[in-house]
Image 1 (cartoon, rainbow, N blue to C red):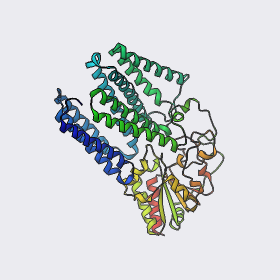
Image 2: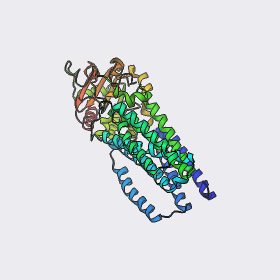
Image 3: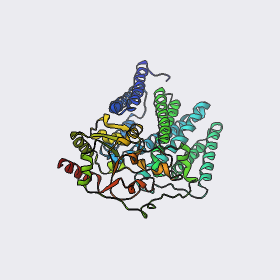
Image 4: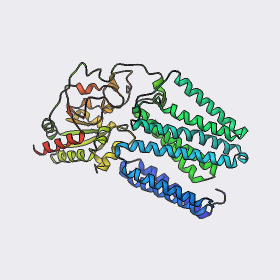
Length: 461
């Protein structure tokens, strides 16, 4: 950071510490809100310091861009429903990767002929990975928003095409260093944009959250490379933190699904048709349904009830109603807990955030291992809008898309109640044999309305 005033360097140090403390705070639900605020404060310090210390030419243009960005970003973040939060995260992440790539392109056009080799390598890396993150994140947004099919999209020789393009892109990137060609670097950017699309197309909807985490790591590394190009230590620190945490989160999510990252990304190319597809069991079995009054008796006189939330809970915006239900049950002396699967919903921590919005006590949230340990002693499991994360096919049907994924073993509980709109399969697109188990009762309808009826029925007991 040549020429940076001492006070600015100290401010950058404070901002870097804020970023580290923010990640630490985000590692636990109880401290996540504070961690988010600390991280935002670090970002404010960093931006303010840059504007106050650097000799900037286009201050008016920069200020205009900040105003436009704030005018778009703030309302989007405040108004987006919890169901669309993963899409928003993907979109914002893609913008970050694209911005870092654009900065690298501009810097190369301005000083490329005089840059030393390490800076040139960082420039190529930033453009290549940033462009992949940009289009890849945009496509994850499209998939999660259901603007296209959530199923893996493959085509003949798709793997060979993707691999060939990747090799060609890297080759052009290497050639940029000796030639210092702006045209060649622009070609790298275009090829990387296409690679980002090909990277996400074969990923199924249920695996998209893992890809979002990986692309987030890509964006972090791109920002770190941009920091090296701009000689800005704070960007290097912030980008490295995001890259490292995103990489670790990707690995943890893959482990939670019982699969390797490579299988999640490229498994569609080698997948074969298997039994257990949507509707295969439904044609042979019937389901048992119950009224809200019947289920209220089951819940009201239980000793332990485990509530398993899923994406359907978010869609119905029923988090406050499920909180009311748990409070009513607790008032009757029932031990109520929430079973949280690591990949429930559409992004890491989706259910934690949803329940925190309804002021559900953190002490009531049970991670998968703890919940499974008490499953045989659980009288009723109430599954609200979840499917794949409780599907026994993950244990019993080799070859199905979720086989090997650790699940909440709700089939080991004494009774299971599903709140669903219909018999449609979950995001993985496979049937759930637990729906036809004799111990399972179905309550069809909107989750929020069904929960409200259960609350009223339990109060009437």
